[in-house]
Image (cartoon, rainbow, N blue to C red; front, side):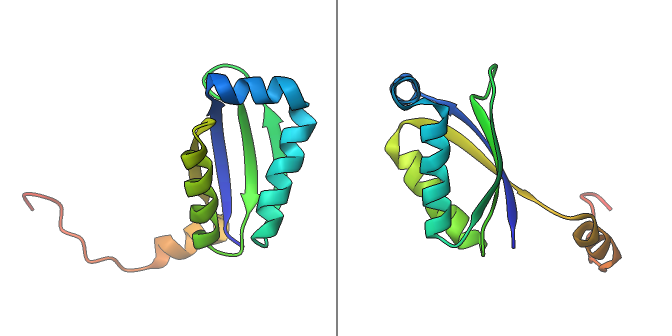
Length: 106
């Protein structure tokens, strides 16, 4: 199952929602959305600094992750970045593949 690192920061309105329902309420909301598309929440942490929370999600396919991303961004309550995560075996496989690439000027 494709795995994604999510980094997010709340807008002022989104932060008010967290204050109102707490971190456990947001975790439950994330789990509900992810499970509804056949995925799982591997881990979720709240943080401070540039990001307000990070999580690792598993989805059955990239389209499911894109669907969540679109809905979350459209809400205006938070700004997110989704980074696909690859296993060591996947990178080893990628490194073995032949790629016909010519750098500029070569």
